[in-house]
Image 1 (cartoon, rainbow, N blue to C red):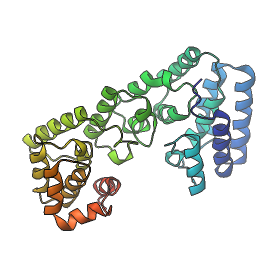
Image 2 (image 1 turned 60 degrees about the horizontal axis):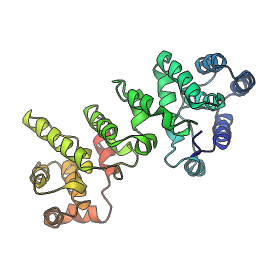
Image 3 (image 1 turned 30 degrees about the horizontal axis):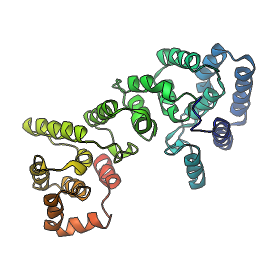
Image 4 (image 1 turned 120 degrees about the vertical axis):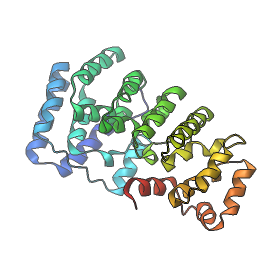
Length: 298
């Protein structure tokens, strides 16, 4: 079993969140199902409870205090239950009570559930990856989740989730980022993006930008985050082109990308655009702010 997370503490934490925000009859049902799953150790009991949870819990976003957010991070760095709703929290609580001594048995049981799950059930399962007991063994299933074109399911794997950065190899990681760009997902919600940046991805994204420009289309500004550390003689002209668009959000992204580069011409571009460049250097412009501006038009 993966020891990177304390399963018992996580169960208690999820129950505490639900108890504070759900109806008494819902909590009573949850405890009954938990007992049945624990006592009988039956995949069928777990499967049935997982599906029936929608009768007792709402798709209402959890209300999480700052202290609770911090505690979630002590359970697993990057664990972000503030993005979960009550129903998926209840399903995750039940999931943690379904135990198998052998990883293969547990994974087989989960795979059966994935194959029959509806959209919200899949979303719940993928979002729970970072708190599952056999995380490494779920990697292929996680990669499978990225093949969907349903944004809520894709987001459950790719966004606000520490799992991809921890377990994906470079190829799977790069494919995830590229698909997120294709689907116009908020890249700033990809965890540990800077730590997983790599030159292969940077080249893929520069080539992608060239294709978009050739078709007369724009490129989402967050793309340049993954290029910034690898700005060089070959692609500095692309950064210059972005700066010449006259679009403030694109210009901010280009200069913020330059700030993560050690390439002298990139540093020079910051100096040549002092007002926006100083805002970048003073951290008044961040990838999160750029992402929110692009996403919501802030």
